[in-house]
Length: 145
Length: 141
Image 1 (cartoon, each protein chain N blue to C red):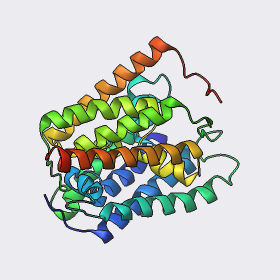
Image 2 (tube, each protein chain N blue to C red):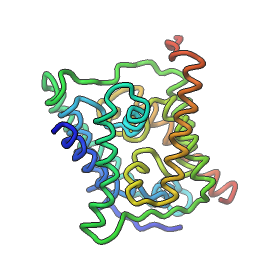
Image 3 (cartoon, helix red, strand yellow):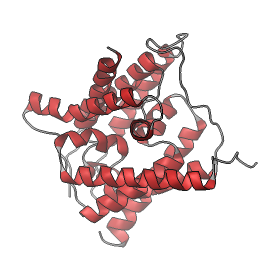
């Protein structure tokens, strides 16, 4: 039952990504190409997703607990460290080169498109390499003031 | 390559993304971050089953669109396969160190007004924009 519900939630996300244009690298790259073939559509994706989530969370997080688990599992870190900023900067470079972010590419796997498969395999390889590097250097250091 | 301006489809898609994020918080109390879901599905150690269910649902999205409209979502790739591979590796490294991507930081974290997520989102939006500018207008992509 729980897994069926989660499958359906994933499906809503996947349909949303599919119709939004986030699974289309040409559209994503054009959103950032303000100096060239600019396509502002993705402002509407971010805006629609952000406003809906903002309103939804206001109601959901008032509850004592989620429906199918005992507690909420919210991220608790607050430090603005080099890992967060450096990692995000590198993510942006990769997004700008390929036009895919993880949330855009994972639903697009359903099309069987070979470029999507090449991206996701490389994505997993990059994640594995970063996890290995993190294990070598130990857990994230607390931020130094 | 020009792409058509699609405000209504993009807004509708965005609202569904937000709806899915809200439902996941309501049901499981988790943020809808593609990075965390993928990494947890592969490496666990706990909660692999529900993350795999979520991923399976996501990948079914294009098939539902195919059933409803007769075609898959448009995927136009104006860059080389090498760019897909290089971009994929960099995204994988970046989202692991940065602990999130567009969905986790950009939607769920920003909706929680998390300072970390706001800083992360501004950072990757900026470097994505710079990268696209350099590739297209400096290197002449």
